[in-house]
Amino acid sequence: MAMASLSIVFALGIALWALITGFLNLEDSKLKGELVEYESQGWLREYASWDAQNQRFLVSFVEGGLGQIRMDGKEETLVKDEDYAGNATLGLEIDRPRNRVLVVVADLLGNRYSALAAYDMKTWRRLFLTELSRLGDEKLFADDVTVDATGNAYVTDTKGNKIWRVSPDGSEVTEIRSPVFTSFPSKLPLSLAGLNGIVFHPDGFLLTIHSWAGVLFKVSLDGSSVRAVNMSALLLLGDGLALLSSNRLVVASGMPSARIVESTDGWQSASLTHRYVGPMHRIATCATVKDDGKVFVSHMIGMGFPKKHVITQAIFAEVARP
Image (cartoon, rainbow, N blue to C red; front, side, top):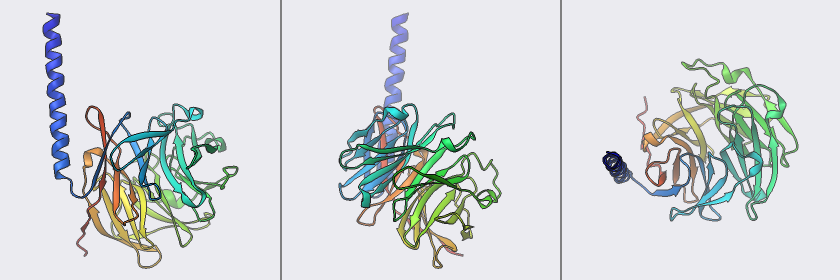
């Protein structure tokens, strides 16, 4: 009887494996453009950023740590930091002028710990680990990071709807708060998934998006000015951001997988111009632009045995304008 049960379980396992494998093969056959597939030890990968100098993607591990993905699809761990073990690493930013990587650390379930870590890109020695949760007892969730021309970092708090500003050496932390960030209606609580993706614009300001509200904000570096970018359509479920040029922005999202918005007035307003539909069941979380101008979208969920993740080239289709 036990042997028969084991045979049934084994047969079901084989059938499930065949079903998942067939599904993944069908998925791959439908994708257009370049595709980077890699096997991983973890189910979830939040962020991937293209490192042009070393021709690789740097990826953050939701179980904690950083890795690299070459174009041949091999994942290699670069950082495993015991000082924040048990927390997730999420958004990351390659700060090439200072030859370092900035990475966000967060407590996924308890929302009690958030930090920003910096690592030297040559030695992978940690430069600093700055706790952001030290400033208060409220629940918080650090999510994404960008860096300005002088090395200051800006980290979004998706739970508290604010931005932390961290000095270049990690020694000083200040906050950018504004009622404008939560002044827009949403069908779900604005604190569930608030300020998310963030980028530094070369003209000297920040662009950040509120996921649930679908609103893009233009923020001065000192936080004295926070304005919603005037758009005809909401960017619902907007996640990671990447600048294609000074007037074009890629917004990764759950559905569709990515969108391009364009501004002709310094981001006082913007229009949706293109969209990309990728493997939406994998959930797109960030976009990155390679040195040849191609946009690649990283997806959070790994599937199959062993776990397989995908970074897909976004083939955009133009959106009909009113």
